[in-house]
Length: 250
Ligand SMILES: Nc1ncnc2c1ncn2[C@@H]1O[C@H](COP(=O)(O)OP(=O)(O)OP(=O)(O)O)[C@@H](O)[C@H]1O
Ligand SMILES: [Mg+2]
Image 1 (cartoon, rainbow, N blue to C red):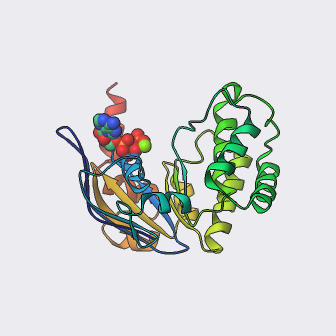
Image 2: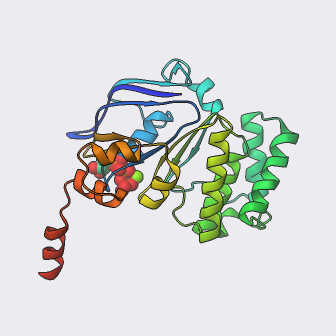
Image 3: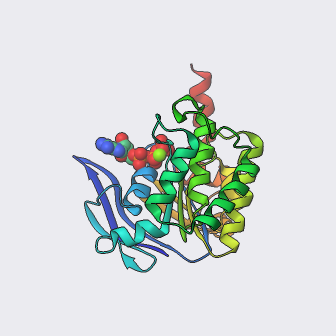
């Protein structure tokens, strides 16, 4: 469903993503982890056709993204790290707008949207988006993406800003969609989310994929520790002793 070959993105001198080879299969939930600035958002932007790669290749749904960009964009869903929506629209106007541009089956999509609104307590559709809190906007963004039930879903830190119940509901919803055949690619800093949800995890550091596999595979492939947090810290070169010393010397 998602495949990249030697994917590279440079910003001037800076190599944000370096020689990335990914493969995510149908129905999988893939967690993409890494420290701040590691290249996660840049990768998602390339995979979803928002940023052009410096070099390398991307296939989504078996199709070359360069040659089938529009076709692919119709089939995928993207929840970006910042919900960017038209502030001068009311929630419901935005929903209608999305339904129009994606040319969806209106009855089915509307029914699904209403169910998702129930799940996330979205009862503010007649208010202007510009007046929403971060979490309210994030939930509407998630709902308008999920209502289309895309075949491949990209989510960049989707639980940030969601309240406890909404985050739990989102995790359940993503699991359900994956069980029904959607493929999910998500970034998160919340390791408990990755640990509980993801079939496979990739860890990126300074633009390079440094480890990949199921949690069990990561445990045995050089990551020290039982918990994902310990594995993650050891793989990304953070040392508990050093961190403690730094704090104590402050
Ligand atoms: N538009 C841009 N112009 C220049 N540099 C950029 C741009 N976007 C990202 N970068 C750089 O690319 C690197 C990767 O950034 P990216 O946003 O992909 O990180 P990230 O892994 O998503 O981090 P975070 O966990 O903080 O969200 C960083 O060094 C960043 O400064
Ligand atoms: Mg990011």
